[in-house]
Amino acid sequence: MTDEDVRAVPRGSVRPGGGFGGGFGSLTPERARVLLIVATRASSVTLLIIFGLVFGTLAAAGSGYSGASGAIAASWLAVHQVPLTIGKTAIGLWPLLPTGFLLWLAARDCASAAEQYAGSDDRDENRCTPVDLAWIAGAAVGGPLLITAICLAVADDAAAVVPLQPPNTLSAFGWVIGLHLLAVLFGVGARHWRDFAELAPIPVPPWVVPGVLAGFRAAWRLAAVAGVIALVSFLVHFSSIGDTYATAGNFVGVLGLTLLSLAYLPNAIIDTVSVLLGGQLTIGPGSLSLFGIEGAPVPAVPLAAAVPTGPAAGWWFALLLAPAAVAVLCGVDCARTSDDRAAAPWATLTAAGVVAALFTLVALPAGGELGTFGRLGPSTGVSAALALAWFAAGGYLGLFGARWFAVPAASAVAAAVYDDYDTAEYDDAEYEDDYYDESESEYDDEDDRYDDGEYYDDEYYDDYGTGRDTDEIDGELVDEPLALDIEPEAESEENADIVDAEVVEGDLPDKS
Image 1 (cartoon, helix red, strand yellow):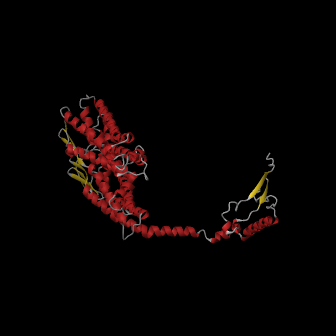
Image 2 (cartoon, one colour):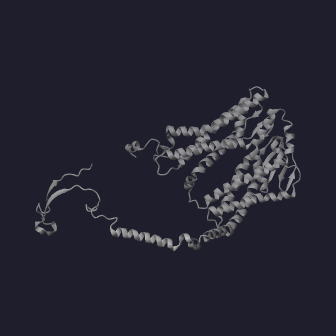
Image 3 (cartoon, helix red, strand yellow):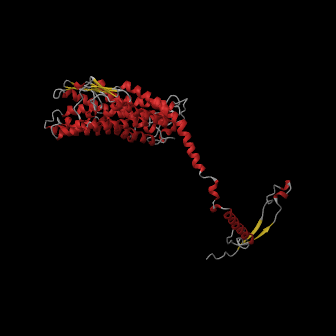
């Protein structure tokens, strides 16, 4: 590439070295600004909320602010699901709502950055290159990692003031990297999944994308059903909520318990999904499933009131219809959006795998140790296997029903609708032959008018058939022998094809 070619490349455009104007070694100011937003905005918003909650809590409690730095560091690590030990209490079960909020902000920033980078270059197609994705992922992970390193140092220093033991460094960095890479994957992949498909080493089969989309829709439906069932259980046991608020003390305590219950709401929904699939919820030494309950103490928070305490009722088996119905609907979606057949249900199996994988991703951080209560959380492995089985079998049933009943029924309805528009409708008086006869007579009359010269005036079209006034030009034409009539030996004469004309300019008509 010559110096002239380099100077000819517009600023910020793609060069052979990479997608960012020269590969990994150079950045334009505009792109550096976008990467800075990706690295800092989501983390800054989260830290701002943590600052407000920590200082507000300390002010409401009337205590000093000496332990504020340690509380802020611990809160940042807790948002990233890092296990901590406060005093002698090990806590690995943190609420998922703050974590989901942070990842949602990070995913939005990554998606916006991908849009700006894909549209900022003079490319044939707006798309993210592997270099683009590497820069965005590095910025999305680098900013939180820097803050995590600072929080680890602060937690180590604050151990002398507050009973906070510094967590394992590798564990903290691992949780931060894993969560923010998930944000990059979902944020950029939601809008640029076609670019990801093109980066695959082998061609992506046509049934993969419909299966993945159907799996995401099925996971959302299953979570919605679980949320409704958890809400019903909470309302049924509403009378026991007063006991949990009895230890709150004042309004600040009531508000804190309420906010804590809301923060743990995604955890409760994931636990309910595990129970609906046929798995169990582990509560220390006890457990909860549709087949039985082994009693154990639960935390004194309002949300825990939704946990049943009595023996399992016989009608609980009917709740297994919820995941079955969602699985059948997932199979119907695959039948509508793909070419799945009973002999090759590849999209349906893909959707089942997506549901199982999504449940595993959210169930891993949804459980953990909680002090003296022991481990609380869903049985991840068993529930993921049950999800795969439910959506593979139920999805196949939905696919089979859609191919054999829904599609033929739709064809029959369409045929019936078109049969209503038969030719008898056009035999009414409105479309009688007399109407067309009258129309033909009108067109015949028009032809007669053209024949009679009504629409033709010889004088109007005399001047070259243009119908416009023309300027008169007087000329005298002197005929010479045509070139075709000249003998071959006389073709080279200079005046063989010359036409002499004398043009006399006449008086032009007055246009006024």
